[in-house]
Length: 191
Image (cartoon, rainbow, N blue to C red; front, side, top):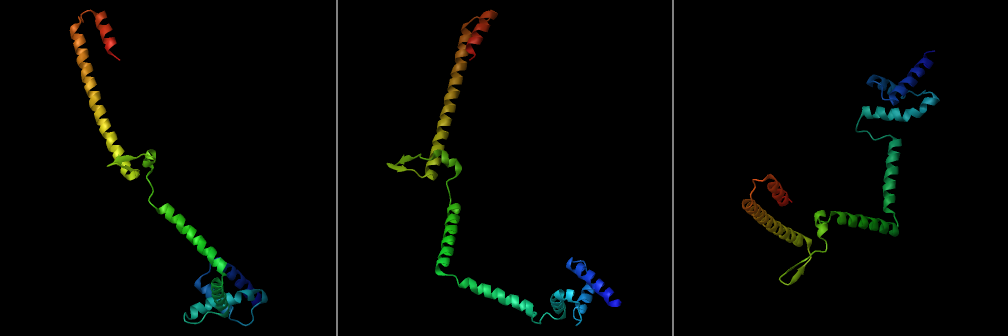
């Protein structure tokens, strides 16, 4: 009667082990159970796994169990298969790598900044030679634009000075004691 109870306990402990909820003592109990020769048929599927876990705790220098060694052999066989590609497959791989490298270099290469795109097609002539390189043309255009803005600022200042002088002269010549005349002149000068 104790056997079925032990098996039920082992089954619940296996379920807890697979959920990652067992203690070290419970795991050792499972390892010891699966070392026994008379394991129920429905639990035999877990025996290689628990024997492998038990062997990890026994010695780190021991060779892996046969099942794990078999998977290593399959992994090395698949690595060898990689080398057995046909020449056209290698050509496809080489073409794909060349395409990826080309795309990488295109996106990596220095491109013209976005602010230069407005100047596309612009050029300057220096010493009789036409220069279309935007890295040279754009700073030259910006310097010229700055000079034009400064000149326009000076012209605007001169016009304001002339305007105020004219306004002062007109106001000085007229008799502004009459409110109607004063309003008429001031409204005419405002624009």
